Length: 232
Image (cartoon, rainbow, N blue to C red; front, side, top):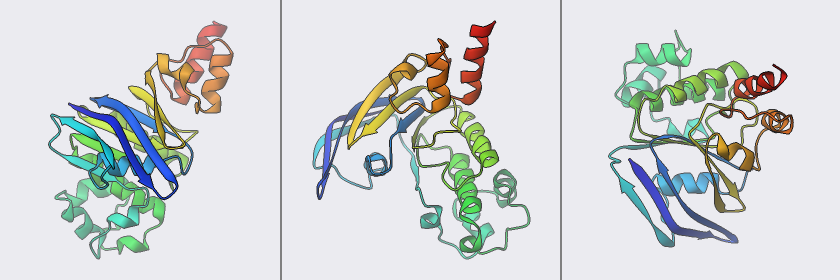
């Protein structure tokens, strides 16, 4: 599987998005601050926005799903159970995965945003598309829910997963890292080599690197292990 952007450009008012890069099977992180162009790029990759120039090549991708930053945008049904069934999924399994046992008859829009986010993530991950685009998947989640979301993402056995996030504390293990900088996509490369080139690396990774550690991946556990190896 492959999705490749060749000199893609999209202009929106005074903002210009420019992207060149390729993503193969694995988990890919695109970091960057709010307003840097992450959501716009996610819409382009999902074919929900058309670039003004350049091309996008897809190979071996038959199904694509985009999880939007705001989960309420996905709601189409009056109850949680009906919402899950609208995805073609078993409510029992999804309710358990999302930690929403007993909420099957609830109005989805009466859930907290964190609960609704867990519901949406459980649904999109259960569908297991070839290309999964996750726009700020950790937003509105508490620390424990972020950890569970990371575990679910890491369990994807195949396909291309692209995470667009400015999360700085809880992250999953990934295959590659890229950054958005004022509308420009910068490819840092494959992990672990890309970690040292990642300008937006969270503080715990910067601390490990400054101490001489070489984390195997980008999680807090990887940073701790790298520091422990130095001390040993």
